[in-house]
Image (cartoon, rainbow, N blue to C red; front, side, top):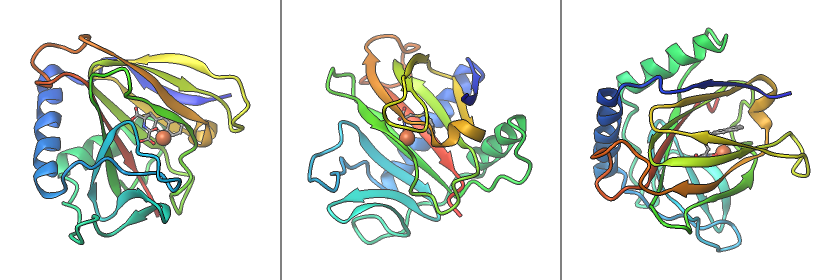
Length: 203
Ligand code: MD3
Ligand code: FE
């Protein structure tokens, strides 16, 4: 049922190092925060974004916002990241992909790091693909169907993998079950853990 393109190990170590540096630069303008869910429960990962909007969660709900909690705009999406997303979207058959934003999730190397089963449905346009880049420690990722109760399967996402969720898989329930410590290529992330960058066309 799911149309997922899993490009295993498609990024070289040099490309992965450049993406880590890109995330560090973005974080100097838009620092990582630990958002809270509408319930008030904090996420078990840290987040920031770049692009014309950023994904935000707080007591008010889940949404894309033009501003960070500190009132400032998000940094622009670097051209190299937008170009990579446009290239990968073409591989999945999407020829007019517009990368509006990249949500960056950082999962520290602790057993608590996870992301519960959810659907990505706060985009205004739910058709375009979501492109996910994994860097750092391996993660056990769960993907199910379009109903929360559908059975899930487990996939390992490794550093340098790109996953493209398009077609029917776009609205599949998914989550991060666990981060597997000490599995990253050495010296990529100084404190270990996992970085995930998800590029989205929102509008
Ligand atoms: C399947 N992030 O940010 S990336 C998220 O590893 C998110 O940080 C996870 O889920 C992470 O929303 C998973 C892979 C991914 C991204 C988007 C999807 C899988 C998806 C959208 C639909 C189905
Ligand atoms: Fe998601």
